[in-house]
Each structure stands twice: as structure tokens, then as C-alpha cells.
Image 1: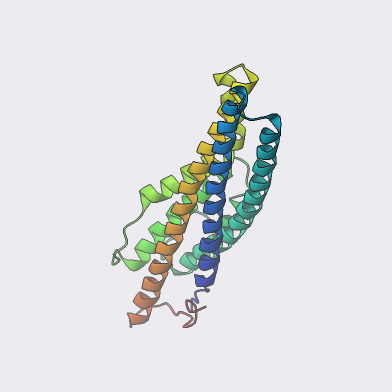
Image 2: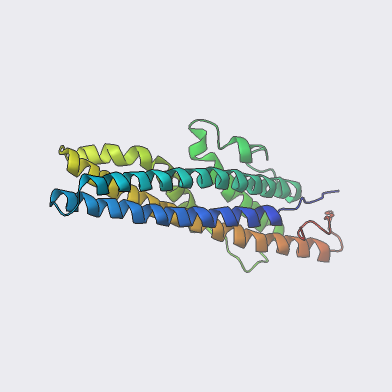
Length: 233
């Protein structure tokens, strides 16, 4: 007997924190562009060093706050991710690519964490489609999964990429810092795309989980049994 574990509440929490990260990324874009403007204004004599110092403090506050929410968002997303992979492991008639524990461990394996979560996300959707037998109005979102993961990786690495790229673009310290701030703003914009895609994926998959429940309950000859309160929590 297979009993699906509840995942709706985890999905809702993950969506909530992902939305907060989107808001923090937008805040980062605003403060980075603000400092980009102040650098030019300072060089033109329109503002003083005090204005730049204030912008540095604001950027640090926003960046630290954003980092905290980013880490919490990752934790709650991984909890949802692991539960989704566990459930589809219980339902799938064929073996999946990884053990369900890798939905957590895969994020912490050096080098492997660049591709294992991406492969597991694809595995979750592909296996869910197999369970439903293609009888769903939601197509496999291959492009969305790719955008989600590519943007996530770029967002995570941007803190390293931005200063290196800025150094290659100019040897002048002021220009170098100006380019770095602009690249950080672009990185935050990429983060917005990643977490919006994450929200969409969670919402769409929640609907597929409902379809799986309905399909299993309506199948008189099904070998599956489902916890009737699984998707009501």
C-alpha cells in the first residue's frame, strides 16, 4: 500500500518565501542602480562622499537581508522538493534516476549540485506525466525548468562573476566599481526570473498532485492507496 505524504502546505510556504526573495531582488536592483547613478554624480561633483557612504550602508543592509531570505527560501523549497520526489517514487511504476534522499543531498555535493537538482526536477515532472498516462492539461514545462535552473545558477555565481568581469572591463577603480554595481543589478534581475519560475513550477505541480489524487481514486483497479487527507493540509 502506497500512502502519499502531504505536500500542499510545504508548497505554499515555499511559494511565499520565493515571493519574498523576488521582492528582495527587486530591492537590490533599485539600490544598485541608485549607487550606479551616485558614482557618476560623485565624479561630476553633484554629490559628496557622504552620499556614497550612505548608499554603501543601504546596499549592505539590503544584501544581508536578501541573503537571509534566500537561505530560508532554499530550505523550505528543498523540503517541498524532497517530499515531491518521495511521493513520485512511491507512485512511479519505473525506477527514477536518483534515490529520493538525493532531492536534499544533491544540493550539497560539490560539482554535482550544478546539475543533480535540475535532473531531479525533470525526473519529478517526467515521472508524474507517466503516472498520469499523459491525461493532463499541463504539458511538461521543459523550457521553464531550464530557465529556472540556469537563472538560479547565474544568480548564485554572480557575486563572483561581477567583480571578475568588472576588472576585465576597466582598470580604472571608479569605472571598475561602477561596472561591478551594474553587473550585480543584472544578477539580481536574473534572480527575479529564477524565483518567479520557481513559483510557477510549484503552483503547476500542485495542480498535477491533485490530478494524481483524482486519477488514483477514480481507478477501481488501481494498486495504489492514497491518504485521503494528504492534499488537504
